Length: 158
Image 1 (tube, rainbow, N blue to C red):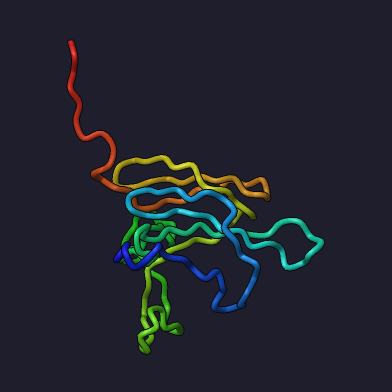
Image 2: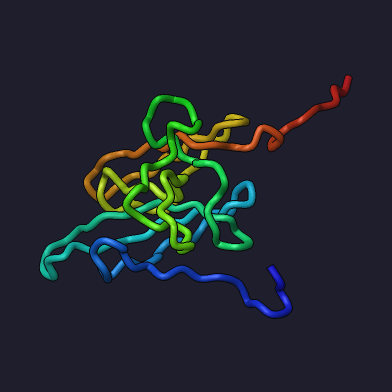
């Protein structure tokens, strides 16, 4: 990205299926392994009803684009691999005119209502994100980490 000509990136929070839902970012993002990690809030459609839902999204922190891999274990099998790509035969993901067959997941919808920024536990090549939701549940997300992050060596002092 040319930082002389650009002041960063932004994202339109408009659902391709439902249009404007009032989605907004209300928590501070995390920066991890070159990714911007943030949660969004979508209020309930009923104006007098409390609650709503959220998404946790991870994008390249410099460009705002998707990663070339799926960072989330979408199918919940304990592995992050090509099986975690999403079937997108109906959508033109990158706007190039052809309909892509698969796409990597950049976000996961909350199963526990509205969520805040997650707590992250790093385990080398994988990470676990935990966040509490407005429905009193706890959501755990298994995702790709960075095998090169963390302690690489140590020196023992006698």
